[in-house]
Length: 171
Ligand SMILES: Cc1cc2nc3c(=O)[nH]c(=O)nc-3n(C[C@H](O)[C@H](O)[C@H](O)COP(=O)(O)O)c2cc1C
Image 1: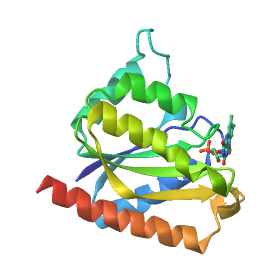
Image 2 (image 1 turned 90 degrees about the vertical axis):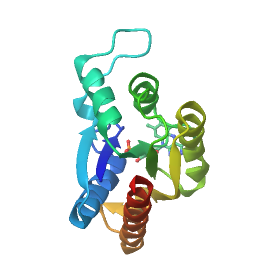
Image 3 (image 1 turned 45 degrees about the vertical axis):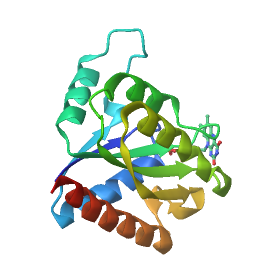
Image 4 (image 1 turned 180 degrees about the vertical axis):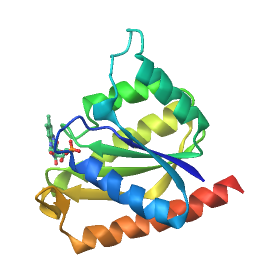
């Protein structure tokens, strides 16, 4: 199974990137062929401008992967600006693909913010979402590392579910 893990945050100390990294390790150890895309290394150009070479390369990777895991940080109870640019400009080949969400937020009350990503992926490309989200807050991290055992447990469950259902959808 080929999984593209897309970390969409541009923050130097991105917590959603840390989530993506942990899932990358867990899913790779189960035998998935994971590719990590860190948006901080992708030159982004907004809609109505010619996409950059890296954005075009990402569109191709999205076309070729079996499934996708998206890391997002919550901004104003919604997805962040860089993720919106990535969705609007690189996801046209994601039609019908299975995907999962890893979300970092400041506080506990913004968990419904991931619904905006669900709405976009389901309505625009009929993508199929894993009905389990990893939602983490500032409290789950210490010195840019995951310090919550509960979060590590939830990441493991997410990874197991994603791996099992992802493989079933391929067979
Ligand atoms: C512009 C902006 C808006 C934010 N809005 C929210 C919010 O609505 N709810 C929340 O819980 N956290 C909010 N946060 C905090 C971020 O979700 C938090 O810092 C998270 O770690 C961001 O993900 P990242 O570290 O991967 O970039 C906001 C942060 C910024 C910079």
